Length: 413
Image (tube, rainbow, N blue to C red; front, side, top):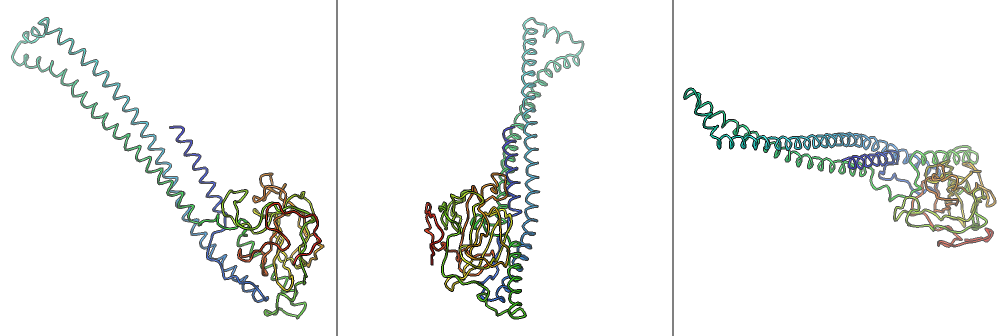
């Protein structure tokens, strides 16, 4: 019984842990109409859509939290019912044991009475006891008294047998009740997990809606200011290309390195989730603090500090060969740039992290196991909200584990 209770207690602790994780994980809703921006007006539209998405998420989150609360209360009640059922079973077992002891005692008592009656009959004492009656009434009473002794014992024995059957059935009923309640708890747990949908199918680096809005606001503000400097006012039809630096080709973001995990679907190295999309390449074989350069000249469109999955992040929008791209760098130990800053291919935007910043090492980043740079490239102009369909293999790289280089000066187009 103790093992059952410990096992169930552990199950509830794990459930609470799962609930805590889901409670603070962004809820999946129908994606807002975020289109690839070409103008400042498009950026304004996307920001409005993100805010609409946040409102929908907040509404669904409140609804889901209310339902979770109800399910948690039901689980608590079911747990209490199971505990009571176990107590009732213990009581029933005690009653059965007590009844068995009483039956054994009554058997011995009955056997003794029968032995005495046999002795009385054999010695004619029984007959003498009857014949010594002073009247017919006394005779009847004496005979009845002897019969009553045996009848009483027999009735007690039958009653105790009935009680034993009742207790045995009670034990069966309580066991079934406990089984039903445990199934109810399991059903509630599955219901709670389903409230948020299958979150494991999403990219682990996906930003929460509040962070997306914060990045979009900072990026829009920077471009609106640059537009005012050029035109004296914000022009919604102004092309984003007007504010981007042109590049003829790409350079590596590190002087040397080795691809330790390619871009694409994989089994997540931290969570173990299969078919998790990896939105870039992991570059290892560099110590923490190693300088990270911009792979192409451009404008910093987003900066995220100490995010729970990705740590310190930098987004840079670039124009290479007339095509707009968004480059992104995750797990930085230190960030050296800010939103709106124009960088060149020689700008050190930050340094390699991922080791001391890893959660397993006492840091804040739960999506890294050691020092490395997560480097990604997507076609289009974005500031943190990057569609998976736009992600490409970074130009100049072989998308295979073990690919290495020792210089960043060879241009790739």
